[in-house]
Length: 428
Image: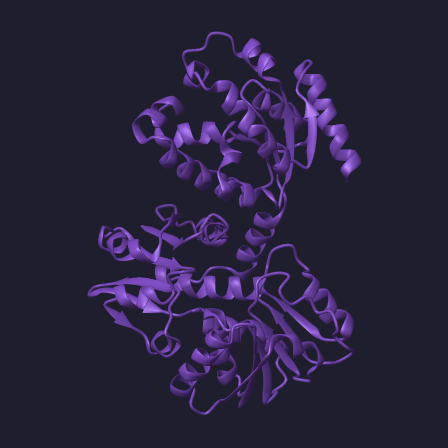
């Protein structure tokens, strides 16, 4: 049985880690959960091309509205929200559902104190789910703090139909910290609202962000005296609801939380040009740290059943880089490990973005050293490229921008590994 998360970008998604952990805990060995980069224009064709083995799809941005258009049936909740985050296979086709709303209710309810008024920061798709969740919790008045007045006005117009018993008032985003609403739900990206200016107050703050926790907003709210709930609570709650829709079984909340914690834990990543010794040094470092070692190129070869040069020849570089980015995303949201990347991986912006949450060690090597180490190697078609010096030069600033630690790759592997461990100890 197959399921997946779709969206664009999608490499950041933790959904594979959560769902796969649920399958493993329940012994669902015939279930798989993938990630696919799919835009709005490709969604209909993607869904139409799925065979009967597919049981469910998780949808993230920008597909939450578009999923209603490809569904055969739409639940009342998803129709009211004007957005879904779930497609479930039925005997008639695909059912669109929205688990964000009940997931948010489940995340908020343990700390909820029956407040009639609340604030929502932001005016996007998550803000709409927040409005409907607040309505379910008994809120009658919502103050919508937004930067984009046009989107805020559209949300108010939508709410007049979707939640007619709810009063919405648009206010300037810069005023929220000085206001007095007892419950504040932030649907904004990290850093947009940092909590500066928050005075001492009681109540509840929900921050939809779940990476780099606690966020400055969460820290400020906690210091001001508010109860704080993070986006991980919503992520796990909505994933468990999706899991039941897909499989008919309940995933353990504890198992999914543990999987999320592991996925968010920083990994140690070795980068550099070919011949830098990433694999050899990586194995030594992993052994010393008591961690598994994974080479992203070796994973790609195992999945594809052919060598990297053969994949390049068959697919071309852009599709290979997309495949590589997905593999690296799975490794970075997997168990703790030392990970070696292919020499060109950091040139993919999606990979570079993912690496920001992890510790990247650049094994620095000159082109002359690289060529001397590689020697004549027909398995490395890169060596035959006439523009190799320019390619090497183009990668250097990207390597350095991505790196947290830069170490010379010259010397015996054991010496380089020792340098890596020493640098990590100093960094800690």
